[in-house]
Length: 119
Image (spheres, helix red, strand yellow):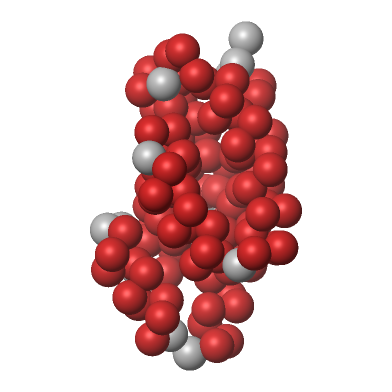
């Protein structure tokens, strides 16, 4: 049975590999986005960042989808952007904090794995 850290790493690996295929020309930009996303969440908040990624589209939306998919896997939050945001809006503060903490924990893996696949 895999540990939670192994599950995070495996999911990050799969997302990074998927992004290489989906964003051939701008995978380097995706990698840079992964590096800055945790600080952006800590400064602006999870909902604001998810809205920003969705609005920007392209590789940003891919990154937002990857994060939503992981949170769906761990907390059964909706994978769809609108439903995800509506659930966060109605969520108890403690659960919201837990989900934000999990988002940051998973992003630690993605920001390490994505650059490793760049070459």
